[in-house]
Length: 279
Image (cartoon, helix red, strand yellow):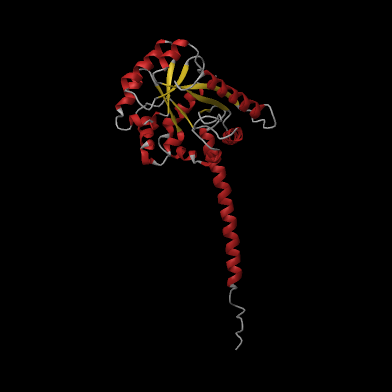
């Protein structure tokens, strides 16, 4: 038996198709709107006056880029974020010979040439400085006077895997006596402090400045890094902040979410203060 269609009945397949088209257009609009909104939020963090300081840009380091191509990709990611000023850091400790340091400097020059003077034309202002480990050899380094600093004033430091708060304070005191200002990088990630937050105040009182990573404020808190970062901000312990993006694909990390958090008002002057480190 043949069923006759009712001319008064709506064509469900047509409605379904129209609905699908409407939903697709709506989703596309929302996607583009979200991208525009994200871009606007990112511009609140990143601008011409944002200074990035990164230990992972130079290839050939233990935790650095795998290749010069990956370093360039990371610089391109910075450019997309609006970052135009970048400081490449490299580690210096008792294990680092002068030959190795010269290798780091050569890697920097190669990256700078490829980024700005060849076909890339990223027009990013690249500089460099060292990140000194406060180990037993540090006293000899600072007495030698051949230090890679910013503005001939600021020294980036990190803590060794072993040692005491008294030893670190003594070395910070040595830095101050020589007329430099020490900046401890990523203190929120230092395992030495996780069970004794009072050590932050001790180093601060000794004349140490702190630089945290913006990504630490959003990180999975399994190791307590996010908690410590927020705690440091609320206790006025943070002086400087940079992204700590380590891989080109990490450019999509939703750093813009920070703009919707109460701590963003605390972050804005810190980001502005970081730009004052620019050479």
